[in-house]
Image: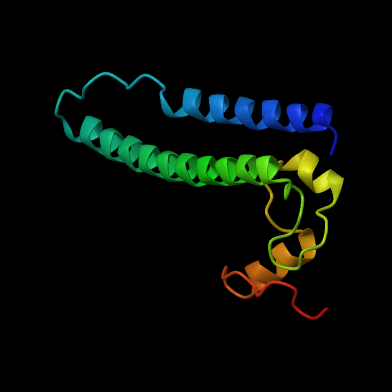
Amino acid sequence: MTQKQIRAVRERLEGELDRLQTGIERPRLAESSGDEGDQGQAMQEATLAAGAAETFWRRRQEIESAMEALEAGEYGICEDCGEKIAPRRLEAAPWARRCVPCEEEREREGGGPLPRNRAA
């Protein structure tokens, strides 16, 4: 990758981190009055907030890993098979760690990573 391409990817990843951080820091809603309706709504909001926080931390970790790969000169290389990840996939998800075939296989297998340089 050229230095210009590296800068562009880094800026996109940093922008995604900023967007995630802004989303997780949304202001909290007013305290409930204590009636059953407010308590139910508060529980629902807490559940949604917990899910959002989990998504935030997982995506943040993916973005940070992509930034480390970028610095190491390994960005855009599938961590399972070692082949290049398609540019269209990286445009859609610049934090992608696997090519589409490896990601699909990983999902079919239940999410565990595949051995590096597996036979095709």
